[in-house]
Amino acid sequence: MESRPFLSTIPFYLQYREPYPKAFFIAVAERLGLNGNERLLDLGCGPAQLAIGFAPFVAACVGVDPEPEMLAIARESAERSAVHMQFLQTRAEELNESLGTFQVVTIGRAIHWMDPERAPVALERVVAAEGSVLVCGSDTSKSMPWLAEYERIIRSYRVKTHGRFCPPNSDRADAWFARSRFRRSDEVNVLHNQQVTIDDLVSRALSFSHTSPAVLRDRRSNFESDIRKALALFVRGGFLEEGIVATASIFR
Image (cartoon, rainbow, N blue to C red; front, side, top):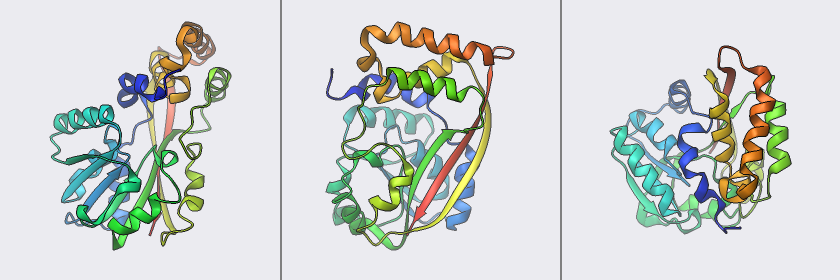
């Protein structure tokens, strides 16, 4: 099995993962009182969804990711969105004062890849005294009637390829920051409703590192077939209804 299974998720990641709606960025910007003069650091930026979404509310954005393949997607996404931002290939643990300070740092689906001993200390070097760190996520509401079946199939095929340090779970953020100055001060939750197809959800499942094409290999066809069969009962007019909850846990 390839040592970087997420690489085969890249074609699916940006388009099919649960989105961050526009209302989410507006709500967080209002809660933080952003005035358009701030610098934002998107840490473990991936395709830079967070930086691009917050770009209208800040003066400058910097995206940091250790993986060149993800940075290439992020650059393309920023160009399509007419967002000018700087990108750096480095790890969170290697942040230093040469970057200057940031009033806002965002971490999306990446905190489980960062060393909880070193990364929070590195953040202390670059987050302004009055700054905020946002641990963000966007997930399907547990009230969706099809979700249990979808997750059951994913669990039955998944291979453990969690981050280097812990599984991706925002509830672990408090422990992750325990040895730093940052403490949870607030949380913003925004509900977004959308329609998705079974094809969308199959592609989303392939965007997870634990059920990536590279992990599934010759099981991929059966995996996709099982999802299609299980979700067919919930389709109405070609679509499934999906509620998305976008969350920002604010640490200061």
